[in-house]
Length: 375
Ligand SMILES: *Cc1c(COP(=O)(O)O)cnc(C)c1O
Image (cartoon, rainbow, N blue to C red; front, side, top):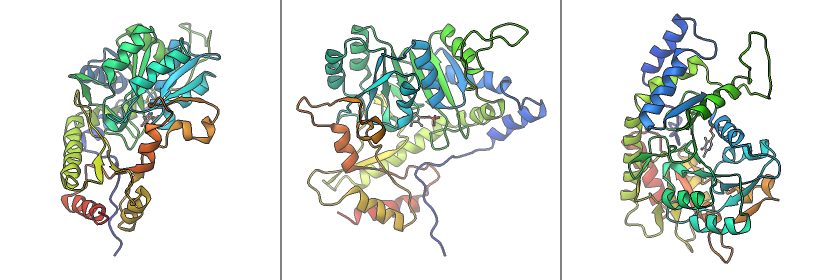
């Protein structure tokens, strides 16, 4: 018999999603927009305390519109977290602006405030800073915000992976001028695909909605004074999101339990450490990651191969953007003054462990046994 597949992070549906989707069908709100979209925006705003929200087709679209609203374009530099998924920085290039990658720091695996400070010495007037909360762990927001405020540069928080995480009691995504969430299939809650742009500035989210619906001027005839996008979330999709949101806290509790189990299971192995959590935050633990000690002869590939042989899905840590062929010409500011890259080091020694909330205790035991077998 084939071994059961154990997933990294797959969608978990509950049933309420169908109720909202059914409502959309019953009222024939299957086309874009509609009551689920408006309600989902209000519910996310109420849950996170973000103020205002615009539901979009993807988290990537939300980052793109945030950059448009800030006015990033040709000749502008945008500082962005280096250790992340390419969707964080691709929209910078859509707008012909220039990404400058800011290294991670070891305490949270997120944007290094030290590197950010040095980046401002080299490029005093960037148009924006895009800061990621990797794997759900909040970045060192106090320090990063202070640097951005000192230089009066707006921050965009890429909270795609950290919906439900808080920093000093406040939700990630609500600190910057703009925040973005993703509801892609592997995220902590999903709409199959979708995203949200959030801001305290209501006028800004209204403008985002305008740009996301082809920038149609308020006239009876089809009139356009600027270039728009087809980035709005559909009413069916938003229905799935409303049902999922009811279970976000439950997903978070389960994800945190998965992290706790791994941490406890590897506590006696000095060569393994877990991805760090920010002591000033409460992480949603979207993905649990482990780091192999320097000098250890076990590699992430060896562990991933062994897990794969048991039909268990695992992943490398995101490959830093400054190491990507497509960004070879872009500048990178390392955490260490001597040029050493923390992100590269994490990439070479780290891996993401299965963090699917449907995994059973037997699944967890098998994963842990397989990893422990190397040490
Ligand atoms: C998933 C993700 C995105 C993109 O979100 P989509 O909804 O897939 O477009 C952006 N940034 C990070 C860090 C992500 O993990």
